[in-house]
Image 1: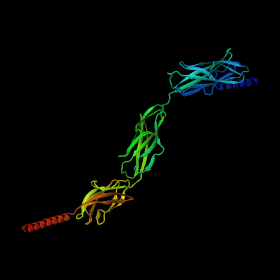
Image 2: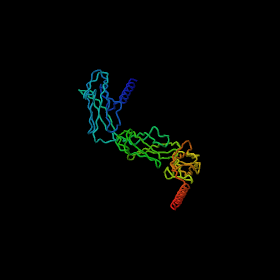
Image 3: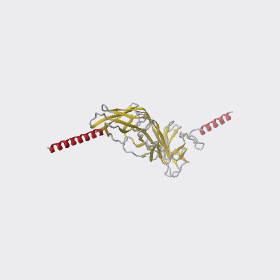
Length: 394
C-alpha cells in the first residue's frame, strides 16, 4: 500500500509540473531548483512594423534571494533587450517567495519575412548554475493590411425651394486608406442645370482634392436650376473617384412652383403712332416665366378718356411654364385728341401675379383735317386772287 501511495504522489507531482505555465518537460528544474519562468501569451501574431514585447515573470519559490542572469536567443538579424523601469537589465534579483517581472523587447530586421513563425529562447541562470530555466516564445508577423476606399456623404441630401436661387449642399469626403491620394469629384445633373464644386468656405471652384491618409475634406456643392424650371423633383448625383475606389451620393432637389409672367410687344418697342380717324393694332406677347402653370390670364388697359381699346383674345385660358401667347391690341384715339404723346398702360394678370407696360402713343393730325386745311388754303388763295383782279381794274 505504501508503494502504491508513493507512486500516486509521484505521478501527481509530474502532472503538476507539466501543466505549469511557461514550462515544458524539458524546462522543469532538477533537484531543488524552484524558480519558474512564465509569460501569459508565449505565442503571438503581430503586423509587420508593430512593436514586439513580452512580459516575463520570474517566480522565486525558494527561501533565499536569487540573482538570475538573463539571456535571449534570437533568429539571425533580430535584436533583443530586457527592460524594466526604462532601464536595460541583464540580471534580476528575486526575493524569496516573490515574483519579479521584466519586459523582453524584440526588434525585427528590415527585411524580415512575413507569414512565418520565429522562435525565441529566454534563459534565466543563477551565478553558480544551480538554477537554469528556459522559456520558449514564438512570434508570427503578417503583412500590414492596406485600407482602401472613399466615403462621400451629407447630412441634408434633400432640399426644397423655388427655382430662383441656387441650392447649396455641404458634403464630407473621406479618404479611408492609409495613403495620401488625389480624389476627383464631379456631378451629374439634369440638362441645363449648373453645378459648382469648391472647398467649404472658399470661392475657388475645383474638381480634384488632395487628401492625406485617413483624412477628410468638407465640400460645398452649389446647384443652379435653369430659368423657368418646372415644379417637381430633380436628382443630382455626386461622384468621387481615386484609382479603383469610388463613392457616390444622390442629392434630391424639390422645385416648388412659383408663378410669374411678363408682358411686352412682339418687337420690343413700347411706342407707336396712331390717328384718331383710324384703328391701330399692336402685337403683344404674354410669357409664363415662372415655375408653375398659369390659368385665366386676363388683359386690361388704362387709356385716356374717349379712347377705344380692345384685346384679342381678352383672356388666356392656360399658359404652361415657358410658353408664350400672342395677343393683338387694337385701339383708336378719341376724335377730340390733339396731336401729341399719350400713355396707354397695358396689364396682364393671372394666378396672383401680373405685369404692366406703358405704351407711348404719338397721335398725329387726322388725314381728313389735313385735306380740310388744304381746302381752306385753296379757298383763301382763290379769294385773294379775285380781290387782286378787281382792284387792279380800277
